[in-house]
Image 1 (tube, rainbow, N blue to C red):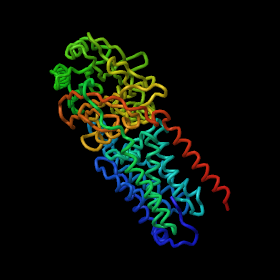
Image 2: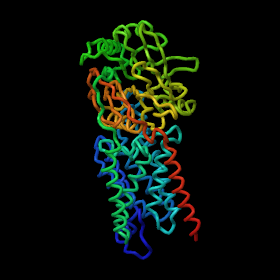
Image 3: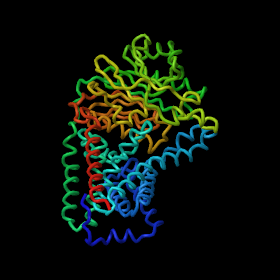
Length: 516
């Protein structure tokens, strides 16, 4: 992350500084978009790194905090445009009611998330008024911005920079430093490459970039546990009914999807080993859980005594919940988990009283006001399979929600309805984040998705069994054994919080020590 010395040759920096504002901002937006191509469905991580190099150089050229904010905001807008373009899909399910909200949602989400990058650009300029250490400041402030958007206002950590590595061995670092640490390291790699273009000490910049890259590609894969021995492991049946969202609650089809899931549950074992657990997707029964005793008995009978985990809506004294139920022999609901991390604008409507007056409604929630959140993360006792930490759909995008300090489960369990996300980018990115949760925790993850992609994921984030998108099917997948507890499971985000705090304080101390 070297920076230039005063008076050093600055051909690239000078060229960027001479560019007119329209061209510089257009280049920043384009650089952000290229950085976003590192994510699925494109999956070009090294191109993503080069995009980060370009946007860091462009953000570095800002001459004032205001210019830094605008440049950073446009870089972020380009980045999120490349990764979150699928966000219009949920509004097309019931287009007559919701399609008009799609442009507002797209602008609000992409522009809103880009505010964190804009703030990072402004802060970096303010912290380094003389231009020195500007790249180091950008690495620090963008990493802080990425962490902040994971927590602020309920958080939305979709498309974290670290996720460009999900299909490479570099993801192994997430088990040690977590996704925010891996994002920070990726930014440091990009900054080192950027410094090689502008620093008189190019050898130092190249050496830094080479060291980080080697650590990524050589050490990263070694941090992943070896492929699991699946011999004699218990089997989990993953059920995927493929109920398109616009048909899911159609009165003429709703029982067809229920019957399909019951049929898949009752089917003979594929590999000769009876399932120890059957996993249905989110909101997979067409009744309130409170009013479904006959359906639950039918499901239990189909599973021949194996417990069934399924998604359902239910009513409590507090209101409506998006829930996960563990159904045991005889249709008994042994345990219920209520989703506690709800989708803003989807499952609940912030400022409901105000926004409902101008026509906004919760797209996926129960009634206009949406669902009531549950109490928080918990574990389910699944008998011979051990304990599982349940995640309902959106909850799997939060790294900090996949761990309970001091209480390590034997597996992660995700039920989801990715039919809301379309059939390309959204479901692929959601699966990628589930894979990262498995890596971070060193735990297997069983995933049942309504329209796909249902999968069994091992503790290294490998997909060992899956049902493709938009296919009605089931698979019997051996459950991998958990790996040894990871460092990230032990520490969570605390070390990265501390490191970013130290870096920020160091930059602030330098800024005030050398203020005009």
